[in-house]
Amino acid sequence: MLDALGEWTSQPYLYARYGGTSPRRADAHHASISPYGPYQAGDGAQVFIGVQNEREWAALCADVLGRPGLAQEPRFVRNSSRVENDAELLVMLEGALAHPTAEQVTVSGREVAMGAIPGVGQHTDAIRAEFAPKATDSTKDQL
Image (cartoon, rainbow, N blue to C red; front, side):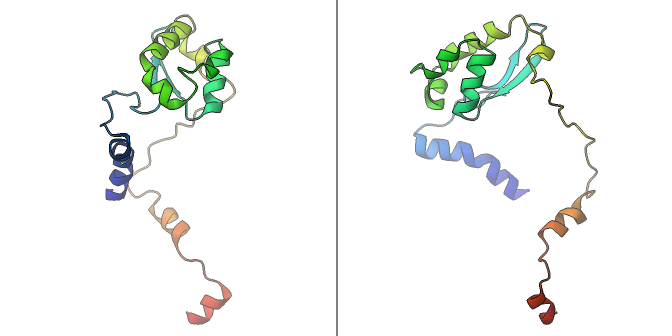
């Protein structure tokens, strides 16, 4: 659990340490990635958009915003510039999502895997087996 918390807090720490300021409060949005977070579709339901790289940004501009050239505009060409202009980007996204339903905005042909929540310890043995040292011919002699 401590390892997970360390990983979870590393991004805000590194952002503050090397960026010179603490990350802004961003509710379910991301403080240093834009666009990233829940956005409202035309039917009032929310869709989650998370752009992690420039290829995804170019696809979002072309396929969702209908503005392929936007990907190369200086205000939005890099993630850092999109974060600086996040408020303007939010207006564009809300405008593009104002009419389609959430169902129309989700990526077609991909089914979200939403299985049952595993019970406590349900997968412990399988996970431990993945990390157990494998016996090789040279280690078998030592056993």
